[in-house]
Length: 141
Image (tube, rainbow, N blue to C red):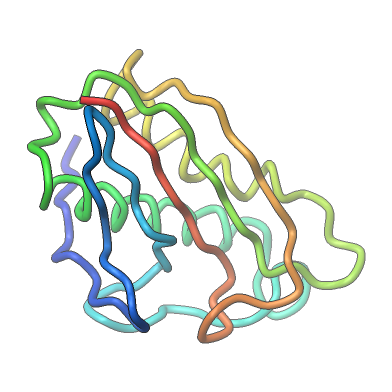
């Protein structure tokens, strides 16, 4: 697929990028960092377009996969259980599901049937560092 996992993003506060418990890996919320920096900041529906936010959700999901791969080889993943996506939304913006599709569709592209999952897409007033999106994953291995 010509997708390369990035380095695991360094935490911006007091947490670890991923935790293994039983047969599950839970990621912390992952921002769309590229080489340690946010490519874009601001609210979706104002400074950030829906299309840009979709791409940023893909980037954040890639960072989540990198955090998982740091704990458990991705080949051992048997299922993406759930994605939670937070969208830094301008007033009146209500297409959060379309934005979080960036993460969801990436999971299916990378993992096929194992990437089909439950999901929440939530609009929020602010995100850390004014990031447009934040993505969490729960996977089973």
